[in-house]
Length: 374
Image 1: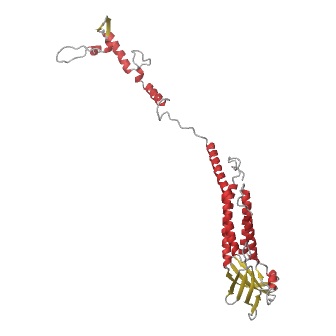
Image 2: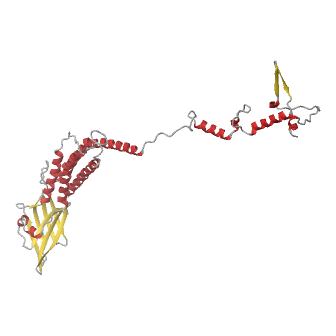
């Protein structure tokens, strides 16, 4: 018990000899010359050595210099610090020392994107001005010249004077008209229509070549088409457009002429009944019609329409009844198709140029995102 248990442990060896057991730190060496002889410490001295030894093992020392051993190897805090500093040190390997790359500000990114967009717009805008505008104008010219050749009047090298014959009827035998359309005039017509009177008599009249019935709509459409072609001819094929305003001005003139030409055929201007009865065409009929009767020829879309009017006095109020007949004119259908194709092509180019003109604050010639002048 006590210190004797350490210094004199029980041995049960068969030899029966008692073996003396000592610890390394309990040995005190006495140096004499070249040899050292161990000495047996006293019980009190050995007990102090044992307690000191046990303190070194189980109780960490703050100084770590009592026996020359490093007590920090057993300290939890020191091991934490050692691990943290080793992983976070500058010389340690990835991934512990890897830092995120510096992030650019959101405003700088937006500015770079706007600058790149402006430069791309500038390149595309220059291509449209120098290449696509002339290409579209050339296509428009081909379409409009083809349209001009469909007109039955002298127009852009077309001799005109095309002659067509049509029969217009309205059932049941209310109206019948056989007409000859030459150019923009009716050069001959045999007209028969019923008049709502006491005995429903039939009124007859005719148009002769000496006094043809002029259809002004055809000539108006031809004149507007000629204007559109002239606007294209005035643009030199080698001219380089510099701004969108130049292109928009030319396209606006072409579109205006084409729209007026197409409208003159699709939406006729109808005259009041009293103006119609006093017109020059009515006076050219042979024989002349009574004062309460009138006729009219006009074009609406691809059709030639004939209308007969009869005025009646009902309790002091003038009213009129009408009866009409119509027929399709082939060349009018072709002309309207070409008008429509040309309008669509011209409008598409105008819309594209208008999109570029919205970016006036970005770039032009200098290709910097601060001086765009369309």
